Amino acid sequence: MYLVINSALIKQLAAAEGFSDCGIARAERLGEEEYPLDEWLEAGCQADMHYMERNAEMRRDPRLLVEGARTVISLVVPYKPDRQMDGGLKISQYAYSEDYHEMMKRRMYRLIVAIEEKYQDFEARPFVDTAPISDRHWAVHAGMGWIGRNTLFIHPRYGSMCYLGEIVTAAEFDHYDEPYQGKCCAECRRCVDACPNHAITTSAVGMPMLDARRCTSYNTIENRAESLPADIDTRGYVFGCDICQNVCPFNIQAPSSFRLDDNSKANLESLPEADEKEFKSMSKHSALSRIKYFQLRRNVEHARKRYRFV
Ligand code: B12
Ligand code: SF4
Ligand code: SF4
Image (tube, rainbow, N blue to C red; front, side):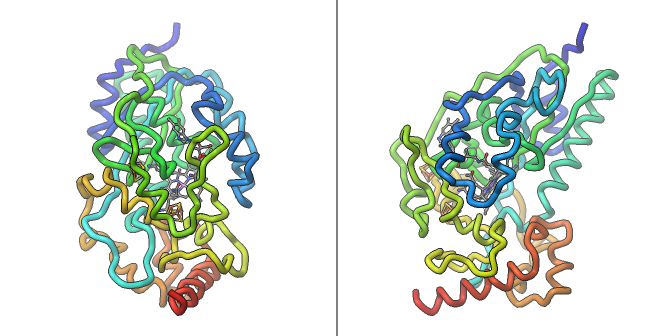
């Protein structure tokens, strides 16, 4: 006999640990129609993120990641701040606060402990953008929202500015959520039209597809080259990019989740001028630690060069 867990109780515990939404899905294989990874890879959209090519089958099937997995608990924490950074050079809002990998993992471990207190034999592993598992597609599969044309997961209340994570377990639950069937982007194309680099393209079967080679977020964060492609218009972003999220009506109407001025990372306006020591201190416990100092300098130089022409 394996453990059967009360889904409604787990959702209550998740809310108590600071998750704004929680969906519970059966751990099963996501097909190509649900997660069109092969097509994306074949089109070369991953640029040099070769980790996306490795373990592709595991990315589709959490049972290959966690032996005996029966359930994926998908969790949402919104991050829209009450205002955006002023000034010409800016960083993306997902990096305004504490590193989301650390924050999400901490909350997920606390949730696992809270579940263990109710069910002694409960065993689980938490993931947040750190293992071959598609965070967005599990959020859809667990019934919490849909994949928008900007290719991000959109929650009907919180929009796309939310961090996602999963707890994968062999335990069985008494109720599973159905994949999301509600609202969607309908005829809206604001994000596609707003992207200055035309990075949101269309796949052979008519799905929106993000070409990382054209995306400012990829170029300012993941691209390790000495210089950025000259035609990439970062519109002043030196870390990440929010343009296709800022124009989205679901983000415009979403409530803000924290006051930027209350946040310890609020002095980020000085980031573009930071020397290496200052950068190290600012990027500690921040998503900014994903880049090296030379990338920051390269991104600042690229943005300033572009500004002279626009
Ligand atoms: C690789 C990656 C990137 C790459 C590629 C982005 C991408 N869209 O794939 C780069 C570096 C560019 C990137 C950028 C960003 N990222 Co990122 N990234 C990831 C990562 C590691 C994997 C994503 C992936 O599987 N891509 C594979 C391909 C197949 O997906 P795709 O391009 O979306 O294309 C398919 C879908 O759109 C699909 N599709 C289209 N319509 C529909 C409809 C339905 C119903 C379905 C099912 C599918 C579907 O068809 C396309 C294929 O043809 C995830 C973490 C994780 N482990 O899941 C975070 C993640 C997606 N990123 C995240 C964030 C926050 C960002 C940025 C906003 C950061 C920033 N501000 O700069 C930007 C947003 C850029 C954008 N518009 O997508 C969050 C997104 C949260 C959310 N609400 O969705 C994630 C989930 C991390 C997290 N745990 O919070 N990222
Ligand atoms: S993050 Fe910026 S560059 Fe990338 S698709 Fe969105 S608007 Fe375009
Ligand atoms: S801007 Fe419009 S098309 Fe793009 S993700 Fe938002 S609702 Fe969908």
